[in-house]
Each structure stands twice: as C-alpha cells, then as structure tokens.
Length: 323
Image 1: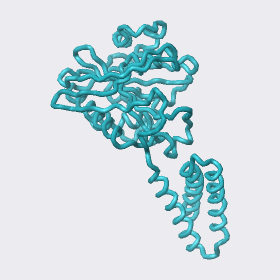
Image 2: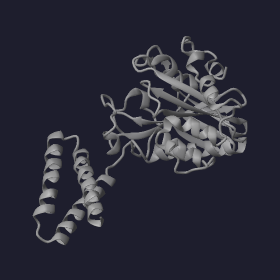
Image 3: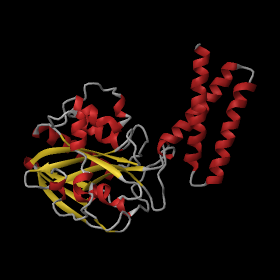
C-alpha cells in the first residue's frame, strides 16, 4: 500500500512538472514543448531502468525539486502591455480616517468591448462607512462557480466596488490550465458599481451573467476592518505583483481571505469555498446575509438583473440594484 501511494505521488508530480516546465520556458513555445517532452520521457526511463531503486527515487525527487523551485521563482510583473480594462492598478493613501483611493475605474460602456475609459481619485471618510454588499456573478448558465465582488457603502450615498480579477495582457485569453501555472497576474479593480456591476448585468450579451447582490449584517466596525484589510492588499499588489491561481488565489478565495480576516465561517473547510457558486448559501447559513427570507426566496429577490438589465442608463444604478 505504501509503495502504491508513493508511486501515485511520483506520477502526479511527473504530470505537474512536465506541464510546469512548458509554462516556465514560455513564450518560446518550441523550446518549451521540447524540454517538457524530454522531461516527461526521461523521468519514466529513470524510474524503470535505473537498477538501484533508491538512486532512481533520489534522482527523480531532485528533478521535481528543481522544477518546483524554478516555478516558484517565476517573476510576477506590473509592467506588461495590459488590456485597457486592467491597465491601471489602483492604490490607496490613508491619513487617519481619510482614505484617498487613486485610479477608481468608471468606464462609460456602449457595449462590453466599446467603452470610454475613465478613472478618478476620491477621498472617503471611514466614519461614513456603513454597509457591505456581497455579489456573485454567474456566467454561461453555470451554478458551481461565480465571480465575486464586494461593495462598500457610505452614508453620503457613495459606493466603492472591489473585484479581484486576472490581469490579462492585450491579445491574451484566460484558460483553466494556464491559471494553475503562473500565467496571469492578479489585480484588484476598485470601481463604481455602475462600472463593474453594470458591465455584467447590462453589457455582457455573448456570455450573459446572472448577478446576485446580498446585503450583509456586519457591524460598522467589522465593515471598516474588512475595508482596511482589502485596501492594504490593494497597496501590496500595487507594489508587489502576485500571480492568479485557478484554485488557491482566484477572484473568490482572494476576497474571501480578506473577508475571513473579520467574519470567519463556522466551517473553515466548507466545500463551497472551492465551489464558490454556492458561497451565498454558505454565508446565509452562517448568518451573514441580511434577510428574513428563506434562502430560495432570497436568491430570487436579490437577483438584480431583473431590476436593471432593460435599462442601460447609469443614473441611480446603485439605488436600482437595492430596489
């Protein structure tokens, strides 16, 4: 049984390292394919042909360690030819209760891909911070996975939405496998709700998204703590870029880690952390969603497409999604 388990581990690492080598060597696709293929061929030869079993294991493990170290040392960057929607990484300056957020995104959309770029800087008073909305956006009719957005509300009617996203370069397309191998950086988009949410409810027509907006029951003190944790993360990414990862460091796990710093779930190993399309159910069961409705009723009520998708006007958008 122990030999079977060891062989399984060696096999999994063989697959992972073979693919990792390809992505480490990119963008030279030919060289990457050749080296990855050679690695995938040599490791089984060592395993089966080296007479001394212990020597074979040592050689294979050393090879795995080298690949892993190379993968871990792949440099993330903030300086690439980014797509316009993620071109500017926001940053924050805090002086007491006053927080000045730079490069808040507020695009004027005509279609999903046709828009006028607009960024602005705004100062918020943390004493005015009073609400936190939790949003899930589902694409392609799926229910297992969703994009997560948090939205902070202030007593003067201002709202600041936070969306952790992959930072794609011009001409780059996101895919599941590449997301495991340090091919995309992570960015926090700080935006008007009428930008980052309306983009999903009103303008994504080829792959429509269903968006759910849930108010939370956190106290003002906890909301402020969540806000401060996230703003610290925004500044860290501005100075020290990090890679996106399909499982461990994605749009939900990143924001959930920030949220979890203040509002810990009852079960830290809840399966809905990965299948985040069901995370609203998890938060409902943990008493975080501010509603007296049953969960099925709440999902129907907080499905905000029904309130805004037929109206492309950006006026009073934040009021409409709170109906």
